[in-house]
Image 1 (cartoon, one colour):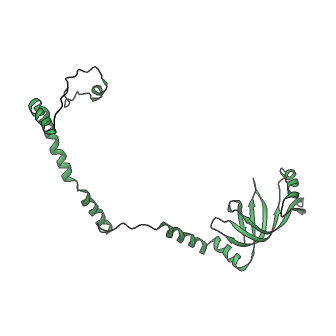
Image 2: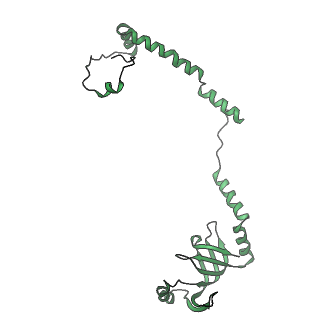
Image 3: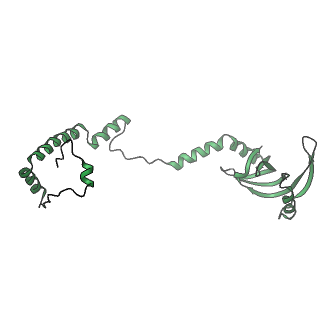
Length: 212
């Protein structure tokens, strides 16, 4: 088997179990092994010696790790011995949250809360908006969870769920609903359920719109 031959098939050598074995030797050290190659296979030693200078040339052409780091630092205007600066993600996140509150819809809601203005909160149902609460906001967070007081809720169940809702509405505690009638834009009489909420907590996931 000539490892340097163009016809050498490494896959066949690794997978074929029927290849003839010429035995193997055990050497006390690498020096002993090298001496054995010099005495028995001078051609292989010559090929290996040709490969060694090529590897050395590649190592010389490439800068060492410290040299590469120095070049990168020089491009960025930093020193190689400079200690790594730890990014404070909490401060950045707090700054973004503060900026969001200082401007935009949360700022508007904060103004309504501080001035004691009432807001109209639209809540989602299964397929549409079906609940409206007119109340004063006591507190809220960045996830739009609201704590309200002195709220008046109007609930408009769909025709499909009207029969199921009617029974449960009458026994809801501690703030029970009462039934009332109203006319829609087409002049049709419809039923809605109303109740007063002294205090209540509303999840932000259920809110569709807050009108100040």
